[in-house]
Image (cartoon, rainbow over all chains, first blue to last red; front, side, top):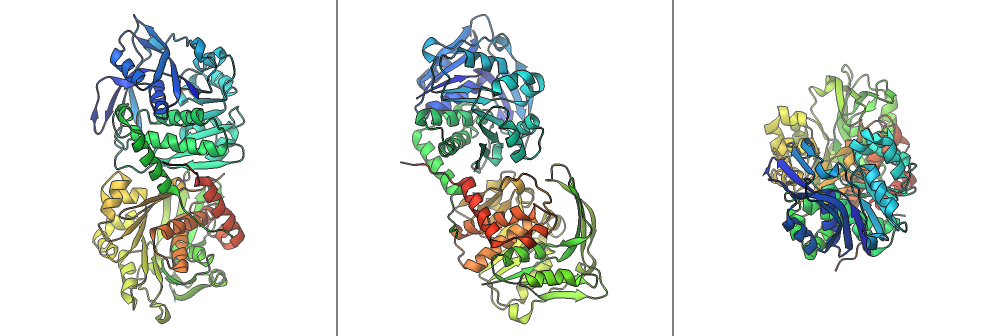
Length: 307
Length: 307
């Protein structure tokens, strides 16, 4: 049970109606790795950081049993930095700063012993970087999951189409699904997107939950209603980490098991939004996760006798 | 098992990106009654119509075993008329015309034999009209369900607060829940609203499903992902009719049974949006409803082993 993750390891600076952070630990691969580590999955991250990245953050990740072998450190470079501000509804955010820094010329290198992972999770990055990781593997993983965003649809459409042909599962949000498919109805969008390569599609709807589609089935996982969403940053990546981590652990790629994986992803993401950055995830215990999985079950389970 | 409904019986004229109707049969009580009739619940409507209301519409409702005893006909008056246009996203609509007509001086009269219903469903109307119906009953019903909207919060706040004290279940949409509670978080909103009188709150989120709250529990029912939403008019009323009808039929007011009632309401509402007005509901068969209930179960059921 092994999960290879490619994605950013970054500094985030976040402003919400509840407060503002300094530069804190962020990045897609960070959240994905921390989510998967809670499921006891052997995980390694392929990424790049600058000389300014604190050892303390690397130690934190190592303490979670996240493999850092694939993280290149560019001593004279600076770590990728993103800064954003959430509006009062916490659903929309404005990007204040994006400094690509060492990410600009990132050439991913998969460590030798990681060239045959069970599951590959391609976090949101340039599609050519995602493709370069796929190309370095010796054997095709049992499952390839890809996360992307509207930026790559706007600027690197053809590259995105190429890498989509190589993946099993695509995770995007509802607006991105509409942009990618040019369909407003998410059901119609799903049909079109499933003809682009992936056999499974996850549409993330934030506080409105997530939809899982394959050719013949659809499943809906709600988001847990929370007293407050404190900081949504990393929720989608945590979700992806829980999803891909659960599948790497259980090695069962049926639709039924993907349903379970989505519930794990949703449960983990519901913790991430409770504090800034990785703060809540870093302290999460297995007991707390178990309790929350139970809350998800209670939230949606009903029993109707049908004829 | 009897359900008394108060609400509008009306003409609607609807424009959507898919087309435009003439004046067609509409009104909250109409949709509520037709939904409940599909569950074989003895139903009577308290409402008012003008001399212009076609016998053909009354015949249609009678053919569904909806009792029309409580519908006053004002021969020299005109029936309530609403006209609206949906935007491309089908989630927002602009009201083009509202002609209150006979509704302006509506004094509801509950027929003698209907003064002891099992369940009372107060459809969206002036809170004082809703209150007048409550006051005419001989015995308090086992369950009183109230639907309302932002208009009454804006214009008749004090009256609304009074009638809220008399009801068991309130159904409103998410924006209305925020307005009523002055809380953005729906969880916090629910807590506040449950201190205003109702012991149960349903927050309708349209295409994003519905939440059911009581003091200690929360349940989430998704909306069925549809290829197209053709016309959302009446979906909320259909939902309320399915919910209150199911409870009137089963006479079990536990949280577990309210979960089932919400699924029935959601399933029925998913038909209403497939065609203009009551068109789809009028032709719906019990077999189709059963199939859709099954689709709802498949949509949300998962099975996770917890320790």
